[in-house]
Image (spheres, rainbow, N blue to C red):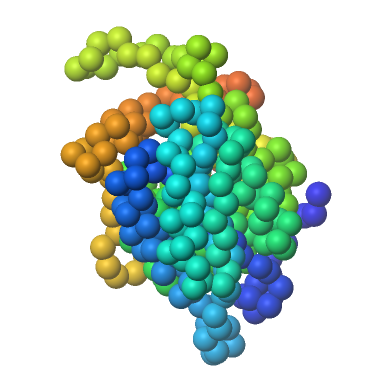
Length: 309
C-alpha cells in the first residue's frame, strides 16, 4: 500500500481523472420523466466543475456513468424495462456520459461495485457517488472542499447533507454525496456484499426493533454499504475520512420522494432513514468495530474544522 501523501491542486487537475456514478430506475413508465429531471440537475452541476490553480480557472472533466438498476431477480422493485433507452436518448448530446443497464447485481453493492470497476477501467482515479435527490448540494464551493480534502490525503470524503449531517460529521459518510479514491476502495474489498439487498426476502437477515407508533418492527440488514469499506480504509491507512460541511449560496436540501406520486418509494425512504443508525451498528459489529472507530478515522484537520463549522 502506498503511504498517505498530499498533492497540489495543480497535480490533481493535471494527473487525476474524476468520475461520477448515478443510480437510476423507474418502476413504472410514468416515473421516467422524474428520473430524467433529477438526473439533469446533478449532471448539469457536475459538468460545470472547475478549480482555480495558480490564478487560472481550469475545468475538471468528469466521466458520468448512469447505472440503471435492471436485475430481473428484483421483480417489481428494479426498473420496468425502458428507462435506459429513454436516458440514452435524453443525454445523447453529452460526450462523456454512459448509460448502462445493470442486470446482475443489487442496488446497494453489486451495482456500485460494477460501476466503480467500469470507471477504473476507464482510468478514473476518484469517483463521486451521488444521489440525484441531492443535486442542490453540488455547487462550486462544496466541490472545491472535496477536491482539497483529496489533495490532503483523504481516501473518502463526503458531504454532510441535512438529513445525515451528524452521522457524516462523525465519519459515517453516505453515498448520497461521497467521493472515493478508487484504488484504495477496491484494495479493501469494495462495497461489502453483507450490505447487499437480497433478491429473495426469505434469505434476508432481519433485525427486530421497536417503534413508539408501530410497536415491534422488523427490517432487513441491508444498505448502508459505505460503512464496512470506510472502516477497512481506516484500519488499513489510518485516519483518512474527510467530512465536508456544505458551502456556498443557494438552496441545499435533499429532495425526498413525493408521497403522492410515488408512495412506495416514499415509504422506502422513511424506513431507510428510520433504521440507518441501527443498520450501521449491526454491520460494523460483524467486522469487530463500533461507530467510534469511524469517528476516530476522521482526519485530524477535519475533526477541528468540520466540528467547529
